[in-house]
Image 1 (cartoon, rainbow, N blue to C red):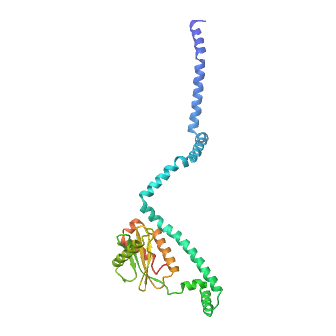
Image 2 (cartoon, one colour):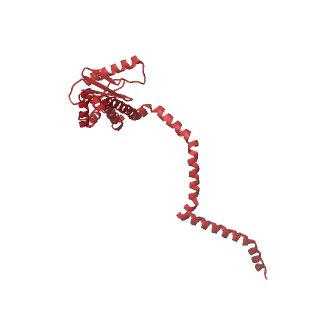
Image 3 (cartoon, helix red, strand yellow):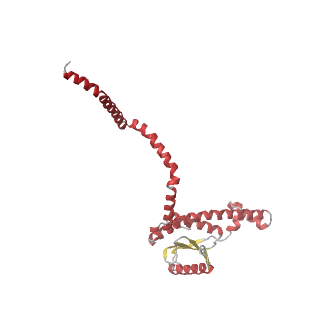
Length: 272
């Protein structure tokens, strides 16, 4: 055995471990490449990790992000109070209306009970009329007045008394004069009673009834002729709140012509 053969034997002995290690690394790299390049294999490895992290994140949200979100909402509401009030006013109004409607139903039932415990010829004929119309005696009594009719609708900016829009089938009154008069009366009465959270809601003038629907930055004056009873007031308030929530936007309030057209379409033919 010559010198070169001895050196090769020694080299094989010394380098065997390194070659095995290199082959092992190469095999692991190949497996990793297959895992990364094959979607199903990658998903099988990563999905459990992601699910676990998402579960932890969901559990931690109330404690970690809850206070931050709450503070951010408080700050946003504080800086945008007018916008928040404008958005919530019609909704809160409808909630209040439902409570009032419930009380009216109780009142109607109470009147019916009292009527059923009494008898008269007048009640007998009234009962006949109520059955023909499909309503009960109490509702007939409450509704027994001449039909109401909307004469004019005026949108008025609070404070300034500026007319934002007006709609009437006939040119009956000077809307600017009426708006100024109503604003002055509202301010005087509300200041006189020192009730900051209460608004004037109704004024009676001669044969007219002026319904005042108060919103955050403006109010609506509806001039009604004929009967202005509780049932009609209830329907009118619902219609005005519905109009405010569905139609009114800040940009519409600034455009008198567009607002007037929308009022005309919405309240055409006394659509209450």
